[in-house]
Amino acid sequence: MVEVHEDGRSGDTTKVSVPEALHSAAHGWINIGRREMDTSVIDQRIVDVMPPSGQAGDVVDWAVIAAAWGHGFPDDYREFVRCYGEGAVEDFLGVLIPGADLVLDGEGMYQESENARLTWQEDARPHRSEVIDGVDGEKLVAWGVDAGADILCWDTSSGDPNAWPVVVFRRQGYPHWLRYEMGMVAFLLSMFSGRLEENPLSGDHLWNRRSVKFLHRLDETALHARGGAILGQGSLIPISACHGDVAWSCEQGCGMCSRVMRRSDSRHF
Image (cartoon, rainbow, N blue to C red; front, side, top):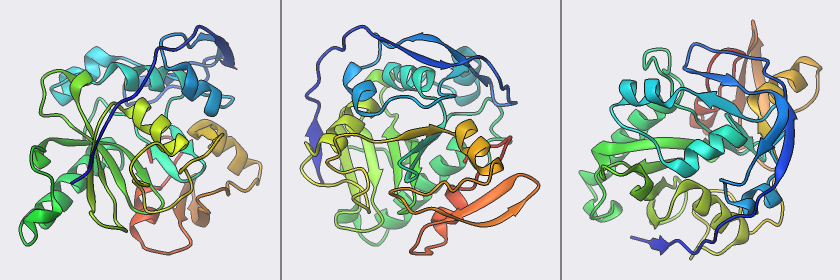
């Protein structure tokens, strides 16, 4: 078991330019489009390390989402969605957004949450030492997946979403389950700066980096439509395409990441 506590500070006020409203989807959110975005609420350090991409930012009806999921979501994550939206960090870590219709969310946050809970159950049965005391594996909600087949979650046991710790299933490395007493944004910052006790993921693509690239999924779709390669630190390579759907696989060919990183013009990762 690994626990790391947050060491954060408040951010400064700044504004960044992102595109005009262009897109809507059946998941309870829309892309906010290019305008002056106030990033004073989100920790300024993450904006400095990872500037939002051209079409960054999604507007989510959080009341509708809360009704569908039975709970709210942390403030820092909601601000991340507002500033960055659904997309990928260094073509390695995909950030998920909850859908209002859990059936339509079959390849997104809902499905990955189910995958995390099932994995927890499988680890808990034969190897109790593999899991973490104090974490309710039945209440894991996934907010990210990566090309190493890791799943990044919250333990949603607390009634206060801002108190949810980050829980990581790391496919490669031991222990496989790690717990961090901090929110999503603080976790990303701590990983980017290398301030955690160890690298929490199965690849070093995001570990101890001075700057990282975030690409909104609409930017990725546009780049692919223009025939551009969406290759980066994660080395995700297109393996098939049909009617706008693109399947991606990491160099290891593990199979799981080609599923969790499936991309579409109208669906989540």
